[in-house]
Image 1: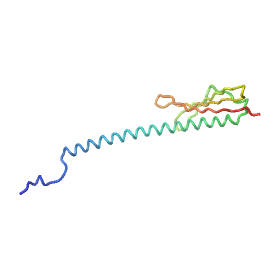
Image 2 (image 1 turned 90 degrees about the vertical axis):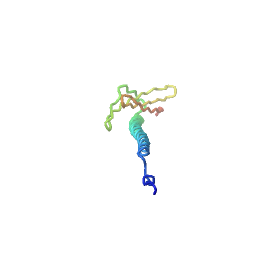
Image 3 (image 1 turned 45 degrees about the vertical axis):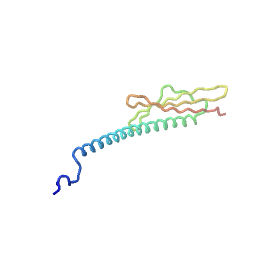
Image 4 (image 1 turned 180 degrees about the vertical axis):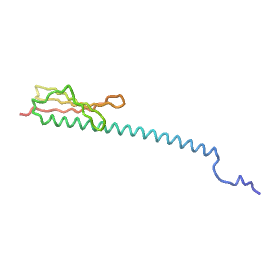
Length: 127
């Protein structure tokens, strides 16, 4: 008569423990990817909002008469979706070409670090 224990199929306790360890390591990697993904999505959202604010200011300055386009050193504080953005712009003029270079900086702070989105355009003198 054959031994009953030898005929039974199944996993040993050691095999089950090894499988659980491999699964745990894999799940920890997936959790790390999720947290990185969430942080990247938040940064992308903030950068998109900052770029939109910069573009809005460029459009506002675009419709201004050429002589009225000047630098704003004080900046504007804009709060959107619980985040405060600071928008400043500088204007430099090339008199020989009758051309103004407009730079708009929008900055915000995340996790103690200041981030900035910058857009630059040129505006020619219009008669």
